[in-house]
Amino acid sequence: MTGAGNYLRIWAVVRRIPRGRVSTYGRIATLARLPGHARQVGYAMHGLPSDTSVPWQRVVNAKGEISRRARSGGEVTQRLLLEREGVRFNSRGRIDLEAFGWPKAR
Image (cartoon, rainbow, N blue to C red; front, side):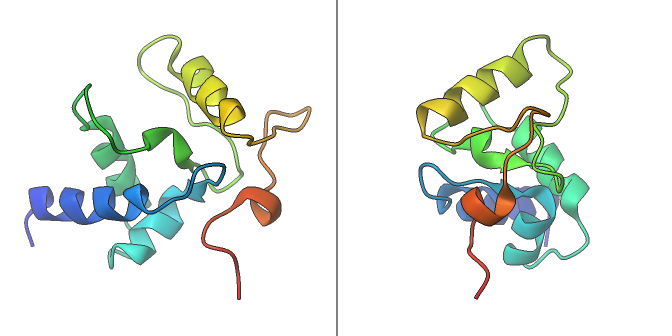
């Protein structure tokens, strides 16, 4: 499958993350049938058009942290969007993936 096809699969998975929940780059890769390609999920998120409806803010790293952005202010925007959805951060700036992670472990 082409890179563009992979991006479409990744974006389709990210669209399924419910409001008030987050998922990790690695989990998204696995759900998109691209296990081990967490970095490609990051590239796909970076490649979103500015007018996207894909809830990019709901993708965080494996520690439950917002990943650094090339553009200044991106991390603040992501945190504000998540907080508006009810996602809570601890004093270290991390999200409890047990409480807010998607999908829930079965």
